[in-house]
Length: 157
Image (cartoon, rainbow, N blue to C red; front, top):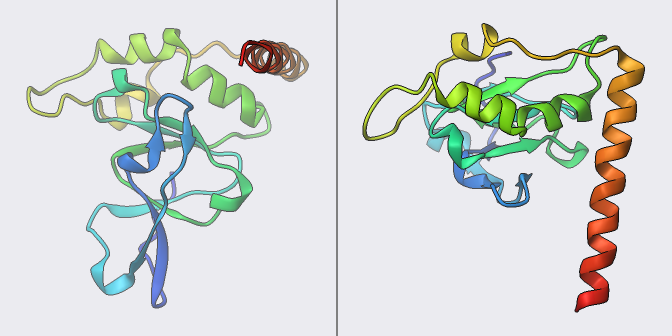
């Protein structure tokens, strides 16, 4: 993860409340004056990253960073999962939103008021990493299922 404090006059900020956890999308980016920046505003994000809320991970405040949200600053309440040459960005997102990862990381939660995990819980977690071609195939299959669900939903309305 890269840290970057906001600069200039204003910046676009993604906090936990910016995520729609039913759709796993960023929906409410806030534009904030740099002078009013919360101390937690320091996670640099870019297109292709996945944001994973470390606070109450069971709520699945997880989102893929689309191009329109590239270069925003996110809260330190997120772990910013950045793909590399071995990880297809959308595979990384679907992996992070999977029950395998969410339930696996929930086992590490600590605290009563705002149960959370820490960076090491994520970095030490064992993630399945198939070859890149298989990651692409998995993403295509998942997205074809979602397209089918969308068609069914349209037919029912």
